[in-house]
Image 1 (tube, rainbow, N blue to C red):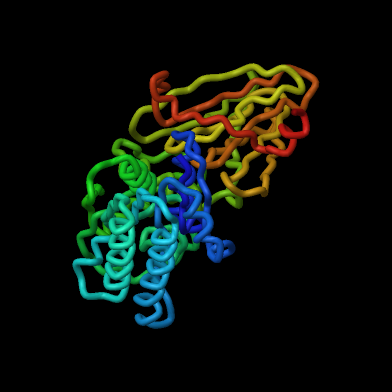
Image 2: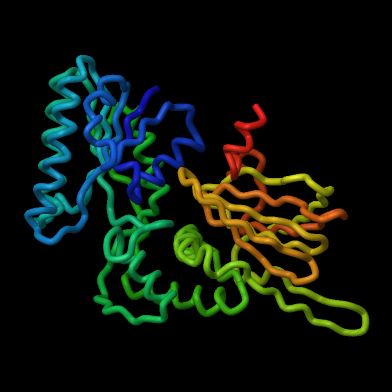
Amino acid sequence: MKIVLTGAGGFLGWHTRLRLAALTDHDVIPVSRANWSQLGEFVAAADAVIHLAGVNRATTDEEVEQGNINLGADLARAVSAAGHPLRVVMSGTIQVERDNAYGRGKLGAQNLVAEATVAAGGHFVDVCLPNLFGEHGAPHYNSFVATFVHATILGEAPSINENPVELLHAQDAARSLLYAVESNETSIRPRGAHTGVTEVWDILQEFHRSYVPAGEIPDLSSKFRIDLFNTYRASLFPRNYPIALVPRLDRRGAFVETVRCRGGEGQSSFSTTVPGITRGEHYHLTKIERFAVVQGTARISLRKMFSKEVFDFQVSGDYPVAIDMPVGWAHNITNTGDGVLLTQFWSHELFRPESPDTFPEPVRPELKEAHL
């Protein structure tokens, strides 16, 4: 299936594109501000559209409301002109139930897109989303969680209004959007975790107290805590890595604690790698994974999916450090020494062959293409 993904360069767009790449064979056409003028020709060649493009915040309420309506109107015209029925999925919001600029704008856009889709013989699905959070959200824009994470890392104390809140991780939102593409339903309402604003802040402070000083893994005994920890540590990369590990030396040699975890599952493993060989070349959607070189020298490389910049870390067993892989980042480890490389790996969950959460992707695609 050929799917147009609007808002592909945004927060939810990145997560949806990541999930499409990991779990489907669909041909995805990413649309952002840079190529919005080509929306009509993209939609005309597509089988389905996932519409995520929107305006969360602007200088005035009028810009928010009308900005969302204008984006919906553009898509409605493209759907009407396509010349064939389309399946159209739109990210809606619980804000439509409230009298605010964002809710009014999203509802107006939804009505325009739905009418055009149905009139052309297609199928429209509204995916009504609660408050979202997740990796790579922009502070003061996408989510108060992103704002709290930013403040936590900087040591700031934001103003907090205690309110109950329903939070859905962006990957769970993406799951619902992908389901909607092939669903016969017309409205889908995924459910998030019910918590409080102050509770989110308190958990982030707990994470920060244990993780930043020595890389201690916090309590990961619930899905919400895992999702929140992944969100937090994504904002620490790359400036807070590698994590220095402290050898305890005596006449016998050294003892190095590579992982401390305060709760949840956990699995350790190790590998040996001969000189010149690279391991990894994959990414994860949820897995928390730590690399620690015990013996030898290596280069650990990472690249955020759909970007080009590669981060390299030169590591050695003589100076033990740990690097935790952010989700949605392709990563590998290469033996750069003359002897056998010994690496310890730790994951927050047990390996499950039926659901390994491991998706192939080269860190440097240009090198792979050069050898084809």
